[in-house]
Image (cartoon, rainbow, N blue to C red):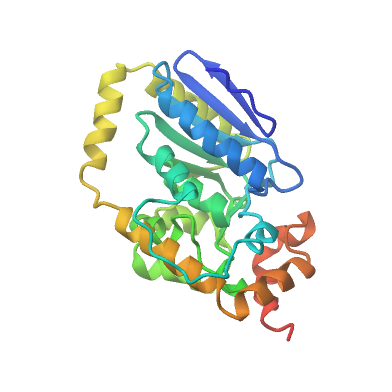
Length: 278
């Protein structure tokens, strides 16, 4: 496998791949980064030499931000929303990280939000940093919804009521609460997370390949099919894009400092002020 990307550095050691995300200033999921993540998910899925994949960030403050709102504003809305029969490209990318026959681990040292959180939630395991990791689904305040599997993943991770608090409240979820609610497996001090994740990943990668792959498949066999829920999520996301509020609130979010480093460090406060800026 070539693993040749502009915003992703892939290091392969034995049966373990470490992917470092590097798209300054906040690891925003721009269309270009999405294309790379999508291609990466396909390459990783097809690589029979791998057992474990670790995702981490070159920026200790941002693991992976939301999808580019300015790009969402260009999505066509001149025809009615339709219910599809196949998953959209973002859903497919997230599902590859969940279903590939490798163990996928997200090492979340800083902020993760929106589509970045949805990708992290698709991984098999997530680890964070005490006092620093923050999870935020900022979509509802700007007139849309978590349309990259979030409405389906979060209830399965933390339960319906807590998922609704995260999605509808759109406030930061701190590392300690995220661990208690089941979003994060464990949390560590900043200088301890890397060593733990590396040790765990190498340990799993040392085990018989078939045992690791079939054990993961067996666990997943007990989960209900997600496809119908994701298809409905995609349809409702399209519906929201066609409302009067969505483009106004998304543009207001950008005008108020969304997608800048300063704004995204306080994204919960920023998104919460969007409705007040009438």
